Length: 233
Image (cartoon, rainbow, N blue to C red; front, side, top):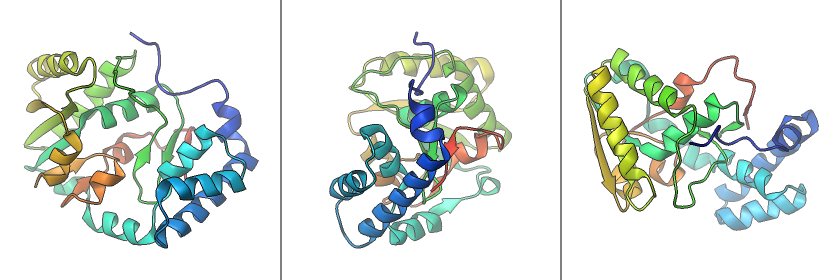
């Protein structure tokens, strides 16, 4: 088991200085402007990255925070508040939300996008490994939906990712132990499954958010108000 999730040695310099924060905010504004005018995500990020002399990790953060204004409006119109969740079924982008929670509980930097969704800098690279905060992350998610009387939670994981089967077994065991109404499925293309579902999606993946009927911003509800390591656009 890995110790923590997400934070690297130079992150406090890359994201913690006032000058860096201002520079990244300006880059997000410029990239969002380009996206609204039809420029591609990769080319827009490269352009602003070069302009502001951002390294790859900073560019990744800028990409996660940026969005065209038209996309922000569409995503906002489909976002649900927690008081509407009672007796609804939700479908969770499993690794996406778990890793975000692990990063937050590890005091890693997370980034609030212009669309209000939170993103981090972790990536799977075909393999998922639990960290010290995994159990707490799952309990926080499970308890939140239980308290808010969600009818059923369907977890979807990327089957080709190493240890996805182990995660499924862990969630089934936790559901039995704590009385969570969970279903866990493994799919080769989980993004498509979630995007085409009629259920409330729980994800921060921009591609999915543009395609779902409705979504819920779970991380916004669970992130502490005093959290130090969140950057806003």
